[in-house]
Amino acid sequence: MLEAFDFVLFGGAGDLALRKLIPGLFRAHRNGELPEGTRIIPTLRNAQMVLEYKNKVRDAAQKHLNKDEFEATAWDKFATIIFPVFIDISKLDDKWTALAELLNSGENRQRVFYLSTPPSVFSDACKHLHESGLITKYARVVVEKPLGYDAKTADEINTSIAEYFKEEAIFRIDHYLGKETVQNLLVLRFANGIFEHLWDARTIDNVQITISETVGLEGRASFYDGAGALRDMVQNHILQLLCLVAMESPNKMTAERIRSEKLKVLESLRPLTGNTVKFNTVRGQYVAGQMDGQQVPGYLDELGQPSNTETFVAIRAHIDNSRWANVPFYLRTGKRMKSRFAEIVIQYKDVAHRVYPEAAGNPVPNRLVIRLQPEESIKIIMNSKDLGKHEMHLSPVVLNLNFAETYKDFFSDAYKRLMLDAAANDPSLFIHRAEVDAAWAWIDPIIEAWQRPENKPHGYMAGSWGPIASAQLLSSDGRSWFNLDEVGSDSGDNH
Image (cartoon, rainbow, N blue to C red; front, top):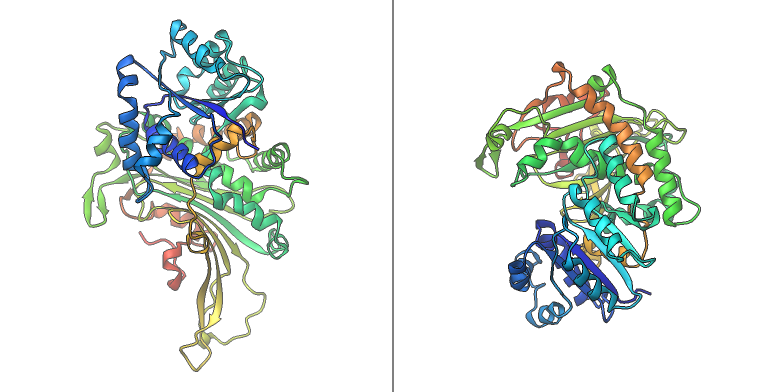
């Protein structure tokens, strides 16, 4: 049972804190999930911000909470557990002493230090926590991505944190793992025999994992141009989703065993190096186009300078083990795409023998579609007789488990879930250092190969499904990208 805890939020006035973290904690408070006596302690860069903070977070909550979620009486009660403090992370001064006095007044309670800051200050924050005597056996630290620019810098960051926190007290967050549908993926696989026995190379033709965004830079120009889509989305979110799809069943659902199985998947990824990168990856960069009937600028127009940074990535990956032998995993992410969604598509092999005549139409492949956003749902696409016609005609139908419809009060808040898990000292949905290392070991050679002049990004129009080369990556295998909204036509890409 979760007991009262102190939640120290470094970077308490940052964008993530105002959009996601504080609203998530308010939801937990309204749901009765914050134990009596819990304290939220945001750190701020100056004394004036401390004075203005409660008004600032109230305004942000009203803006970022869903319609009808904000309720003044509930917020006023929640605000009484917020204790903003002035801390300069770079300086060890009397402000840290004051923070220590505040925390020590809470006796031996759980302490969560959430570093919602740039990685460049992780080391200083951990060092000053240590020197102020704030790292007790009840303390743990939560760190946000990006964890490094490559394997070397990721190792440096992890090593600096490990000087002060043991590995079991380091919680590396990936908010996609906190989504209820992602967690339900494991239930779907390991608690339902109908799927567990249809989850390997004998039955599955291919797997597609897509995170499609409609936004452009949105004020993140300096960070994004230094990172690109591969570092920003594939190295963490998409590879973590791939691990959950492909992992073997752990003998128990514990953090250690889940992480062990995910690590085996990462270590089994077929390396992409040198010339193999050219034939198995596509990188793109959006140019001006139409979004919802409005003309939007291209990436270079928004950035205001030349750049070869990719805003789109497609990869054909393989996992070299007996379960997934010769099953391609198609990974795709991009900005300024035609629509916003994140989903996993498991496409099954066609029936071995066609029994209906061609006049009945072409059957569509059976697919299991796990959508993570904007709605959270699980759909099965199968063939059925068109009941509106007397003669036999095959038509695709969708069996739909929509969580918002099934659970009327359902609202998934990944950050809320993960913050509460950190407070409960449950690392199951967080990332181990070995996973970070293995992911970078696979990603770094791709980045290196992309530095060659011939591997410049392909242009694609804003509002499309990405570069033509992305469709060709799959068509060369006799396959196409699946887009759920176009299921009636069994569509692939439309550019």
